[in-house]
Image (tube, rainbow, N blue to C red; front, top):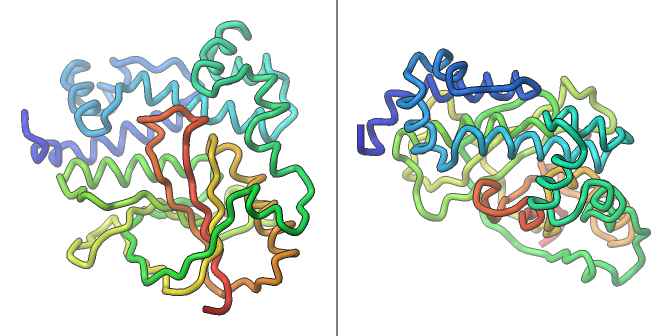
Length: 285
């Protein structure tokens, strides 16, 4: 099993392991447990997993736990010690060391001054340059995706399933980008009812087959906010963009969904270096 196309035989097993990791993120995971889920030997399973996803299982679990911890620091009042405990670190010191290495600042400093805090500032005319808002006329964008219902902070599970499926079938093509569609407002819709979709931009030649779903983003004018930092900071960016900025921009929202384009990969860069474009649909040309 040395060629990528052979990994397609393990598509269902990849999905089962992804589901298991997300469902047991608070537990101590080991290769034996995951091998049982995948019905493979520990060595064989890890070889397949790393070959498809480009990172070890240990790296995946650490990345997901830190992603969740960043969200808890940015969006809740949980004590740092409790956040560390939920991320499975034995003490605040070890959690702080790993968190600072990945996000560039200690947990308490991140809570007080991370990238999410700039969206707590009040907006005034002319500040759009400070927050890097641009305008773009876009053509139709074709997407293939996996639907997700539940906490937006857990949409990564759908992305893992999507990428595992496409890579295991050797169908990823240069130029494809990860995109996210978020259909509900988390401030008014219960968390378990939130609807989203993890997507890839795909050319017309790409055959969309189950469990993938095809959707299209229609051509039009968009305002684009480029956000740099952890995905956990996104809720405050949205509140600022669709609140303060829109209210003073003299622009009107178009009746179609907003979406996100991810300009780099969380497996390849630190959370503090993640670049995300939020596309807001506008009326007009």
